[in-house]
Image 1 (cartoon, rainbow, N blue to C red):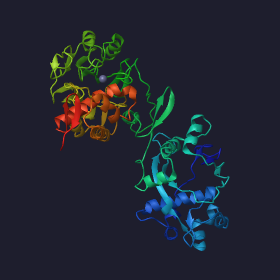
Image 2 (cartoon, protein in one colour):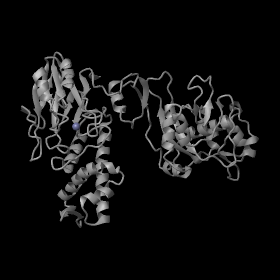
Image 3 (tube, helix red, strand yellow):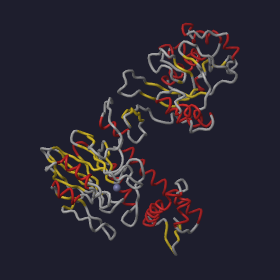
Image 4 (cartoon, rainbow, N blue to C red):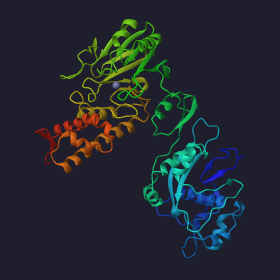
Length: 512
Ligand SMILES: [Zn+2]
């Protein structure tokens, strides 16, 4: 890495990888005649790769090029070349009979600068192996203080505020730090970039600006509240005042954070003063939380909707009704194991619609987490209130017998077919890219199921307490008791599907 000039107009004094702007000459016919490309490197990739190698040469004096015998050029070869950008690398390569080794350059990822920054960049990151025997030497005009540093050390020093870097560099190093060797990185990149293009978004945490990439949990929420960027949306959990998400949608989080509830239960408030309001999941029976909801809805509350009968979701409903009116809606569980105290006045069946002015809340029966679980679709805005069926930041517990894994996956499959734009979960931030998120959840469960089958195949007939240590070997032991509930849900699913059976308290695989 090298350090940018302290007087640079963009990111002065920070450590970066060598690189620069694509030059028209990087894709000229003359240049492409002196490159050694790989099959499959299209013209764009070739031009970007040329730019990467050209900049590394101009800024650091490193050159990935083959001499006429096909060997990588040496430091002695390099010393005869002119690094000045005006000298033109193409003509020098042609004169020396060298070919630029872009076949040794691998595309790592693409970053597009945040929408809200005054200067924006569209940047490709590449990885190549440093040629043996060459010594980087900074040009001392654009780049200074070249340093060989491992990704881990750079990140460590950055966290000690001893190595200034910008967000894309930090995230790129985080990705690289996953690999132990250059070979491991190059082998992975042979199949293409490790991650899709990224264009981060900014919000605030504890008053300070914080940036997030697509894979970070807050990204979807920033996308919803400020689609064009430029927001200063506070991502800290608000228990005192409702957070506006859209003109007619607020979130107030109940002050019940914990292992099972994450930051707390999200109560959503939909509507306006003229049309009236719906409250989705009033939460636990906390008088102050209810008072804060009541302060927003006044005497205009029409619907109190509970997604399911778990104690962090519905018990506030009677108190909220006493203060603000409204009719309690929900679907009691089926079978024997639901909460009998949960007694909605108005049963919501699949497809039932609640009207709030011009908006429609459609109920979707989504059994799985709870047999009477419903999700709600705010149809005009394509927002899915997912209750506990989908939450942000952790895995939903499927706790038999009221929880059922076959039902859970079938409900996810059904949600996948809806034209959802954002998911508003009962725990955690708003989720963007719903289809991608739901597919990942399905894949996660099926991956676990495959692991359960493998574990059973290895152990033979086995009690669940022993099976959990194998099937959840990637989960901390402290969580195994909880994991055992999900394991039971997987085993019951496999039993329903005819793959396993329980005999003498031992689970066994059945022959297919
Ligand atoms: Zn919950």
